[in-house]
Length: 113
Length: 111
Image (cartoon, rainbow over all chains, first blue to last red; front, top):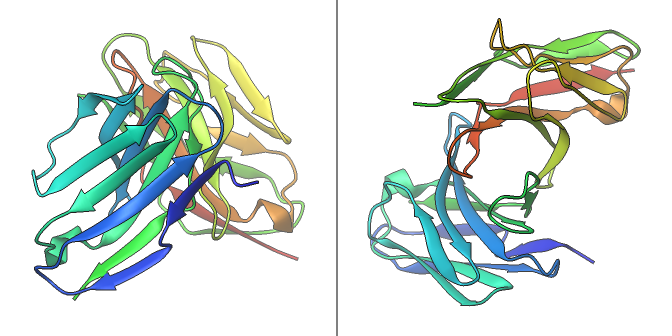
């Protein structure tokens, strides 16, 4: 059983399109995260939700909108995609917002052409 | 602000060689320190952690000691295996609960 899963694994799309990446965790965790890993391999937090409520919202364009329909899911919707959005996006979860260990999904490689 | 600097990769070693991956940090307050590992095609996994100065984290033969005086958390393993080939990320958490990661160091171990 995959603890944190993301779909799709690869996403190739054109500039201006709107796309979504889905994330699900079956660990019963309260807190979920989205990270962006750019071409230089920097891994940076974008958002964090605790019990479906937003607790971290870093400086991210408002074209990015996270949605948490329930504790087990945190989806990422991106409007009007730009070339600079090309990256690998990782979803993660933790027991709660204070837990040391985060469990990561396998990543979604987004390529905007 | 908080930051993590780790050695540039890639690092290529022969099986059974000694591994060191350097990591230094800048943080406000007293951070907790972590090493995460990413195997090919998978997400990151916590490898080890240390939550206060002089703590040593260890797992799967890997070790790292929290050195407050040198603001370092270097990863070491005495004898690497081919299965250790992966990307290793040093990270810290200080103040807020979010993690700050280094750039990652790719390790390749050849037979």
